Length: 283
Image 1: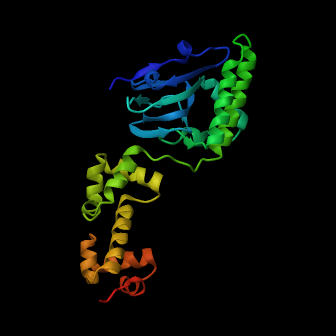
Image 2: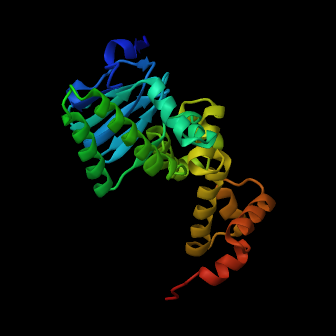
Image 3: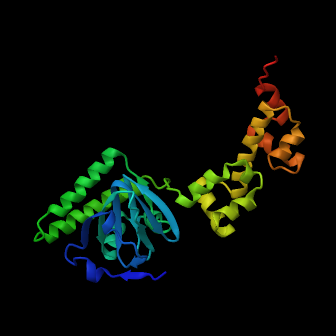
């Protein structure tokens, strides 16, 4: 796919150091592009699929996204959805000045190191407040360029500190990962195991592994085993199958391995779990 390179010199006002835009669904860029400036955008209405660095995020109202230079991204329009965003683009040197003012390398790392751009969910009050501040910035007289530049930097500091730095632990899972997890909950898939998960993901094992650790805090194998163990627990409670039969039906070929994982996860053995949770109705 061809990547368009957008330049600050041809888009941004050198004196105000920024460009404000309120964009509807049919105005969003649908071609993969990068740029040499920063921007952040706020979804103020509806939702949109955002293709970013080879991942796809479904963004809904109130989501705030920080885009770095060289992030490759575009929007996927959907005629059945409506969306409106506010976009604020600004020079790289403006952001450098803000980070220098804040003073700690850890702040830069929060914004610049992650593979995906920082994305946070604002509540209704936060969204409305930020929308009002952005609109106020846009309504300043264009002749007051020094004031606009000052207000821009003040706004950037507040946004970085109050939303991105204060919520550094918050992450938004890619759409493909959320959809994969939903599909994998079917016994036909999790019983087969990690290989089926990688097959359904249609991505390299390394890519899938990194995503699971980043967004879910577990490896793909650990995720699959959690699904299997919960399935096994229900079989123990609701059927008369032997423990060996339960283990095999849940995807575990080694009974010792099953017993070890079950005890680690439920803090008790399968046999004891069945004895304390099974509720039989005898006719």
